[in-house]
Length: 374
Image (cartoon, rainbow, N blue to C red; front, top):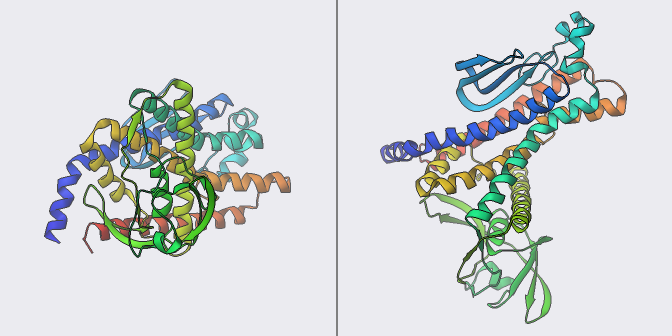
């Protein structure tokens, strides 16, 4: 326990500032997406907050929006005129008292398509931020390119049992085309116990084999222990870093965003199967941020892109309290021709809050276990 606490303070010197930097940038762009489209459609924005709770610093702009940085830096929100809170829950009592001029600038009275675009603009801003970071990164620094061929197969491993041999070139796994060896590692690490179809090129002939990665405890370069899926293959080919032109870099950025989304869905599937051990919360992200920041600021900026995609994607899940939950409500409104009833929306918000809190508690517990505090 003592060594774990000492370790905590060792990485927190880097981790906390790095985490605050990451979460502030990613949340700011997310909320800026909501804010910008809302202003475009004439919605009055009452509050733009980075963080929750009491304001550490605040100011009001010429249009009356209160901008603030709050003391709990675990998210943020934009509150529109006509909303009861930062989660965009409608303030029905206030809406009923509004006059015609107030309804013109109130979010709940905007057309359905405008409300939908305002909501989706937040996650979209996260994807745009990630795309911009990755594109510039691949142009200025370069992209790691590693061949997808297998150079070694571990004896008695899942790969050997499946019939994979040295010299094979992996073309796709579980229906996903493979462009780099890093992509193979990402897919396999999140597929422990899952039988995967693997298409490979063996001497010019295409073969389909089936392999089940085994759950294995490993230690990463930062000495973090974790359980991941492994096949038992290696690639000892030399990695190259290639600088890309603008169009190639943009294409590579889109490809990497697609890969991040794919990995995120695999992690979600593992959670649904009852395996949430790889889920990380604020403590885990802060620790990773500190470790990455200790390598270089460029690595931290690259991590910001990955985190931005993850936050944008998670917010699109159809869970009330999240942007995807609002879009689900709007879809129902479009089908029914009227908003969902007050009781149905309230129940949905409560269930959504329970789900979000449950995931947060599980992720935080995983973080504490990894730190050997329990």
